[in-house]
Image (tube, rainbow, N blue to C red; front, side):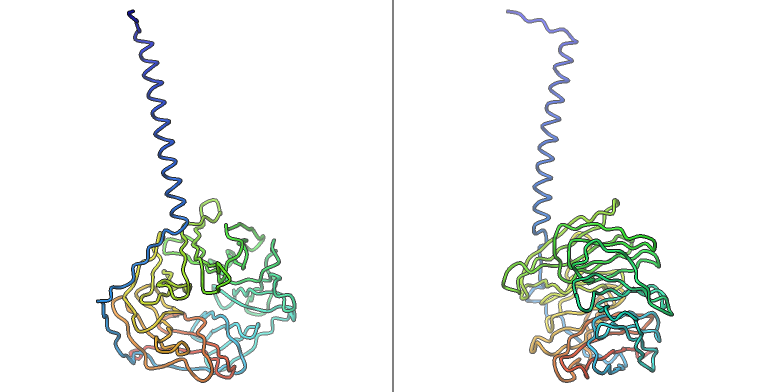
Length: 374
């Protein structure tokens, strides 16, 4: 039997066939992208530690003059340096001020407030985050305006204290707690958004050189407290947080949980190298086979000071400087008696500032490292 198919019918059949094939192709692409996205969210980070053949030397150096300011009876948790003589430190749940000569306690005038962290844009615009002194879970945020303190923000979840703050400008402040709620205080109202994890330990904000905002944090994943899962979130245009990376490990893994912001870079500590966040992964810096980095501070991945555990002793922290090409070993330890814990390092103008607290409170210090050639 002979079938006659006219031009119009053939055209319709071809069109249906093309549409069918296009739909199938789109479905296949969607499935592949979905699997790729899921695999990327689970554990996309492949850590490449330095080669055992890489024996990069660490040079001894005395490039800084070191000043130590002993802060008696204080447990130090955070630091903001507005200028070389305007230094604010969270200590014993309160706020102290160092003007280069004297240490003064600033009266927050709220006996129920216990401070943990702070951030600022100037000496007259500093935000202090914490909780209720008698109910440590209650979320509280204070602002220092140069003369007095005021309460800031209204918080949806009052069951977690504030663990990190980033002040982008005087009226744009982001707040993270140990929950899945992230807050943005704009001066007149408090907006909130959510992340996928219900609990983050040590959440930390980071803004890159083009202004993109990220949030890092980790969870302990089992009763074995050394196991962790580390998460990276990115703030999208709709003010929603999207998880873009995660990796798992324990405290002996190559890439560890310790992360600090060095100016335009986020640096993460490792067992044999430190790692720079690229926006889509982690790149190893020059190997540091002598120590394990914990606290970093500076202007970029090519200019930072690091406090690290020397591999021969967990209790001794030594200072190292990295210039982008090589490591320099400072002659000083942080050890002063007891167990010293470095908390924060930053760079303002040409000087490095840092705090470390001690199991013996009389050994808590602010340190200032000034270049000898200045």
